[in-house]
Image 1 (cartoon, one colour):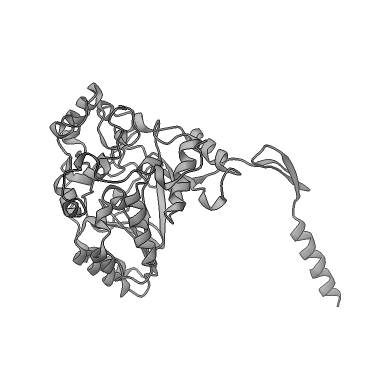
Image 2 (cartoon, one colour):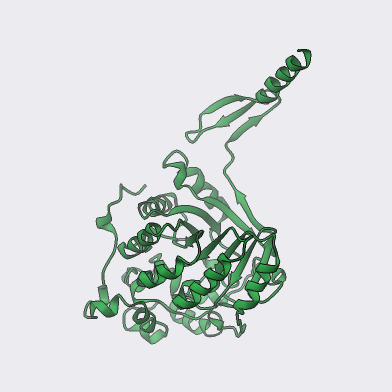
Length: 392
């Protein structure tokens, strides 16, 4: 297990860009304009491995490469297996597609009634508003669409999506995603949120974003003003490893929560990156230090070219089991598989029931000790009470 954490251990600052003016470094547009996106950009700062060189060649028609200066600073450049590096620098294995992998692994296309709207669950929709991200994760579920490297030609129609939501009164929950919604202009974000706030049956709105992680400079006063256009907004960020938890990310999260916006985190279980108990424990503790609730731990989707990053389901169950009793229950995420071909999220939990019979349930706690709890006790009490009332 990792020792107790301290903010002094969190990375911060301009790093390799120390000579850049503070005002420029703090400008999110400067960060976007100075992203590393070509092999030559990386070769100036990293000794690329043979696999990474092959990965850049494979990425031409798969998924663009793009890393903000802020996020690049979090990479341990001396370690080819750095968990931050492996998430954003392509590997040659991306060109290997196993038989079970798919371009659309969770079946979004077949539940898309209008362009940009995925309506899989009865009371909520996924609203895809852009195909661009600040940086590109190599295991992205929407690799077919995001960055348009594969010629998908995604062209979101915000008005069509809003009209669909307005006409379908069963929709109470809207998740804005893409791409990353927080890369839209302040004005467009404000307009979308304001329009959704006027639809009476929409009770709350969520934004799925990795921008605070890749681009914390984006969370400025102007953006906060735009986010205030909806009275019940929630944000889900995506942090996979404690090394991504920079002081700048913490500051961004505190700004959002001070605005009254609750934040949850969604991690993806990734082989050699976060698939061990110690790493996950430090991650969830850092999230709580940022006022972020660990929400989901996803089994990596069966996206094409991701097998080298996919850990086993058993490993995920072992992590959840290992966290029980070792940290507050509030910090433990729900481990889920987003079932292939559109089955939706299926929760998985370690089995803490040792035996179940008519008289008792034998429970196993986090230390492996057994405890008995009577079965159907409440039903017996209610039955006796009803009998007494009938005789009065």
